[in-house]
Length: 204
Image (cartoon, rainbow, N blue to C red; front, top):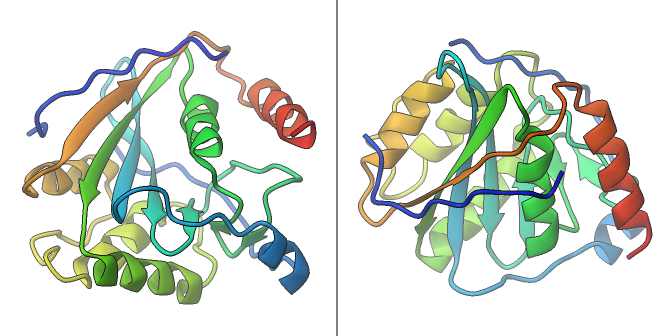
């Protein structure tokens, strides 16, 4: 499950398939799961792409601000150790971020991450935006993410879209983006990966 290929490169030049329901973790669990910023403030856009067609299937956003959270709109990444509030996942250490990408990478899909260093204020705006956005309906993961990004300073060129590949292409045009790729050979059924990740995190 954890065999990965990471390819650093210059910026790279379907319809979303997502599902979720509203969730609101208790204050105490969220407070205990707070993970502080690691390194410079940054945003990492994750796009899950079909290995055969290249079509985008899901969009997620890692926010490395005063605290680290994963925005997984209408997503399926869950673990008992990670509190969630309406698609915002807390407790996201760098290791958990790796597990997030690993969860989505399998025989039929690969994951592309696009990381950009941003001013601290921009990262904080993104953090507040995802916290207040609310639960995202099915098939709206990219629509919601593109709307949030479009409202940030320096991201005005991002178009609002339902399609992960369109957002991927717009994000790739931003100056300073670092792109990496994750491929794995897991079975297409994500339930096994999800159970393994849940077990790993319960032991830490």
